[in-house]
Length: 338
Image (cartoon, one colour):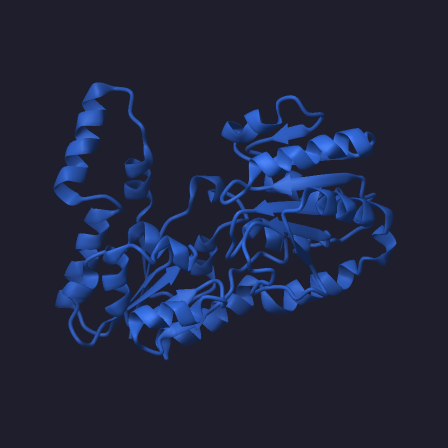
């Protein structure tokens, strides 16, 4: 069987250590279909009226997503045998191929979004029933997906990280509170927490790494705002933080969470979700609490005052032994070809 990769890199992951697209370097793919150009075309907001008409016409003819690449995959699935198609960001790219594939071919899709993103979507419900295998990057919702597929074909494989890059190689003075990320973050709650930290702990440096469009949440606060920094700068921030704070509306796999823990940072997650556990770390490694303002402040003060109690190396070892790309690639290869 020949294994085919179909994927792209999100803009904020391009030319960086982050992103699921790195899996292509650790799985033995026989063919790479990089859909980057078409995915980018669909994301551009053109000001020029000619290009706006072109884009709209393109979508009217071919549909959203990456339709030309999907048509190419349909061609391969119909005319060629013994192919395994692996769509690494299926919620952004996959459609149609199962309608055209011959019996010797398989379609395997990795989904990154939580079940709630699909449960009321009939389009995806139909897709799920026709896939040979589904890979999830969170194991808490496997049974929910099985209810849709009616098959025992759901697999949990965690997101990976470059543990050769993200690590804690030297001792750093941990003098800052750090927040990193954009997707599914509760910025309003984060701003309220940081406002209180400014008042109660005025000497604490607060760093926030996110998209520029989120800067407005923190415009009246004493914080340092960063966007589009290098991987080296980000790693340095992780290493210098006594705590990385994640105010999450909901969560599955999380690049920043793996980066922080691989770099030896303590992690506090505050969430609105009823789920207070996760697929990656037990309570021995990270703390997950409800979005209670006063309690979160207490925990931030605790981590600040008890840095010597945190077992950095034990956490780093856990990440190295479970989430390096080499390990994740091997597990993915086994699911794809068996």
